[in-house]
Image (tube, rainbow, N blue to C red; front, side, top):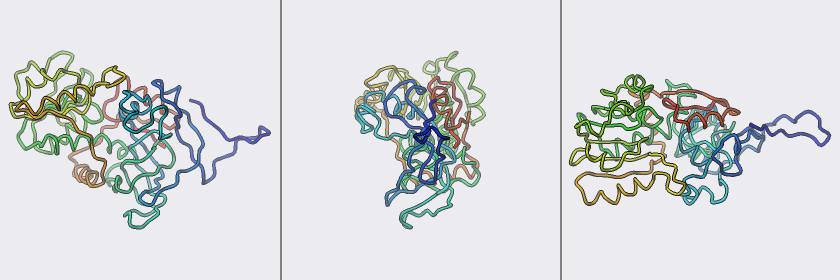
Length: 346
């Protein structure tokens, strides 16, 4: 990765960053190869708006959305407001954990020195702006690295199961993609809701998913869970690409299917077409089929904190990388090797 330095015109030693600048990973164009489009740069510290908090970043999480926003794929990402020709947000990264550096208004509920976690605008940097409504106090029993692994993935799992799946005690829940970022939380959250949980993953991750608390683990390389004959009340499909007809075959007559993932190489839709078909079919069948966009909000971060501090949910951190290793971290994630979450330490 190229490291941009500020030099004087005579070629003297690099000027060290003062308090008005910071080191950050930056991106000025879309591309699928992280080592080609991401740079480590010295840039101005961000300025916060009235409803924002300036966070001194200690750690930042990496999720699949990071790659999609870096690549600008599928093209729907660009149409969604992230920039047609180039990224509108120059610094990647959403998940953040750190210490409040500054606030504009006391009404935001935070003060300098508070340890927080949540969603920011560009967390792969020494400092990041974050909407006050998307932050919460950091769980007391987590390190900054663990806390940074929580927000995006755990919010998706919580809202998918609690709000969309409406999981009840005693129900059978199937998690497809149980070893990934969202899936590792989904297994634990479903258990906390009193469900009987089956997780689907590859051979090398079976033990991990079992350790997360799954009652049963299916190795999809050896067994086809859609041919098992078991009916599930709720299916959360995170990392699969099974046909809707296959999933419906193991879904109870009035069960709920929530699709929040599924990768294809399609440059326009990238797997979203399966979610659209589920929404279109749902009104005509007894089963509830669909998808959702997770809500980034402080109230649900507090709900997650309660689960974490009670010991019901623990972040599964696979590896940590430094800022100058962000391209390697994204490559590792894209290759499907991660068990749980990947974290950037700052």
